[in-house]
Length: 235
Image (tube, rainbow, N blue to C red; front, side):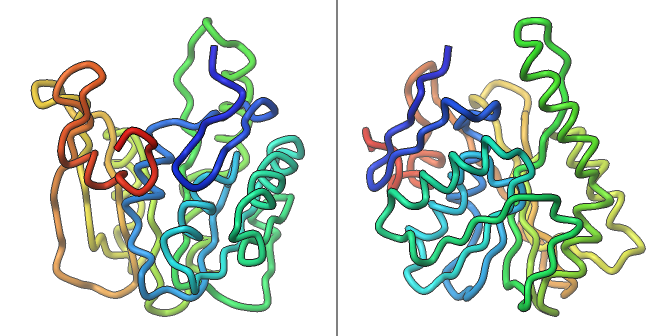
């Protein structure tokens, strides 16, 4: 059973009202996305607010909008953001992103999209994931990002390897370009489980690399430790 909260170096994430708990995927995307020179960021499906809060910590000039469709998760994310020292730069919105019409566009959109893996161990989580998958398809995400990004803005996502392949295929012919692709391995001797993808409408030299999470059980690999050093307590 997951804890009701997750303690990071500079903030705490409460999660008792969120079906989607703090996990490696969110931490990876929050730490991996390049935010240094950005002014505005949109976090789609913010859940606990983790990625939005990580972005606020990493760039003191960044203004973050975060949207969440689930009312309970939205309230939790708002409380988590309000309990940080960056609360004035994080703005929460509740509703479908397809209907979101902000007065400005974004340098970065981040999304840790739901993916549905059927498991009888947690039927409540299964229902939540299935519902979220129905409300934000990959096609929807690309269309929303096309509408809300600045011309040189970028979309950053994390997906299981098979879904990442499908997602990249969807971008073909739609003037999206993959600028960076990081493949995530659980350990050095296991098959990759996730891919981090950065896309934009500007074609650049493709950067491909890899991140390994652990050398062995409970021992972080150097690549993951370096990426998350500003966040995890024990690093």
